Length: 106
View 1 (tube, rainbow, N blue to C red):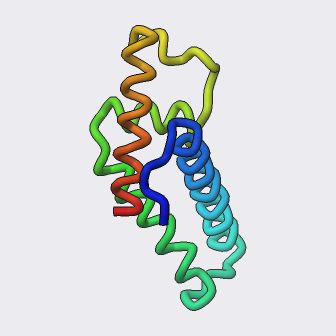
View 2 (spheres, helix red, strand yellow; view 1 turned 90 degrees about the horizontal axis):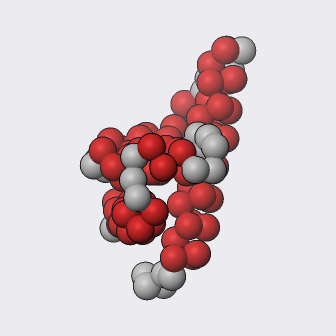
């Protein structure tokens, strides 16, 4: 498996995992609401959500903020301007994606 990803590849991987996380989490919530919760059918889904939750909880405050605002719950495009200078934001975004992927893929 490739481990030396460029910035765009990292962004794509993080976006993929965050999108999948949101989709699976919503699916679990819907199944719980309608009473269709079966351990055998939700095993992998629940494991995936719990894994991503663990990764998110392991991130430092800046990394979590960036992953949350850019990938999990995208808000407006320039949300980061209230927190960081442009160069700082992009440097921290790269580090945040690295930390997320390192925690997830080892």
